[in-house]
Image (cartoon, rainbow, N blue to C red; front, side, top):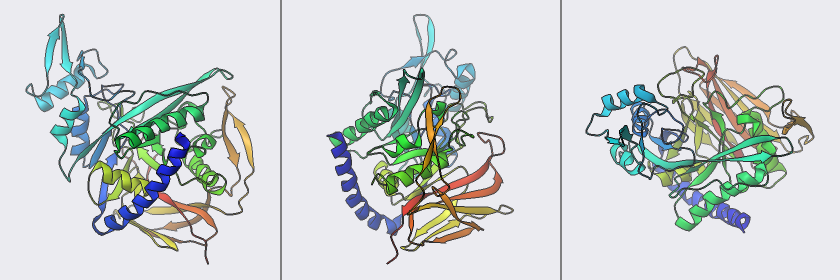
Length: 430
């Protein structure tokens, strides 16, 4: 039943987004935002209002606070010394906002500070057309694999949710993902509010494979870049990188499973706001830039579902243009900085053979090894403008822009700034 709903929802979205795209083209602009952030409401080390203040002051246009298995809708008081941020966080909090905003009390002899709920933070920081806050939850689940004796994390964000969604569980990693995706889609159907799920950091504890992601229904997004130092964006000799997984996912969904495109997003997954090092999970590492007519949750969500956005860890794009025959990317130039754009795709008639791979420590199957036909480099273009003309035999084409500029406060040493342009399905040449 839910699978049928997911298919119907996808069809309805296609019709809606066609209309939306036509309207938005005339007045659209770019909006920068982060979709994955943590606070003292779960395992972050700062107050949510301090976090909102940081992102707003850094020029972000929207922010989703996405704590683990909680929405900021309850009354909550914490010990300002014994929480993750400790006295340093509290002193900074009090210094920034003062005693009129920071609420404290003594309860049963214990000094406490109140964590501001969602509606109060939103009222303080939101400005129409300037800064938007989107309610979110990181639905934090896991699958205990009895055969291999490992717990595999299954985390996904519900963006713009209204009510708390409990982890749904499942009898496999893929079923656990699907059950949680279905729960977000069900809330969307029952409330009528635009919202979507996105799968988080598949390589965290090597928990999710490209094949499992490719088989999902009703899921359009996954993190191709996550700023947490422990999520292994780049894989290793056994495990596929996030980008390699993306090409496998796209190839299987478009070439074998008759499923729609899956888009790649970049996020901070920030937890640490007081010490900035490559071993801490800091803000400001990954974001999305969405082209929409208005800064509202509905317009941001509809634009992303139409693929009208890019992901970035530093590179700024001035424009992305699509015609029937070509993709053109305009990169914002910087003095002394060089850019290289790589266009990726898989051609029809690709070699679909693959080799099973297993994690050397646990023995659990991981993403399989595929031929070079899957996600081959179609072209490399240097400079601040890059175009690729379709041959018509590609299943899809996506692009990555790599800068010669080292990233400030990287999640790993030696990281260069990048941007990821969303894939498009290529129409056959007639």
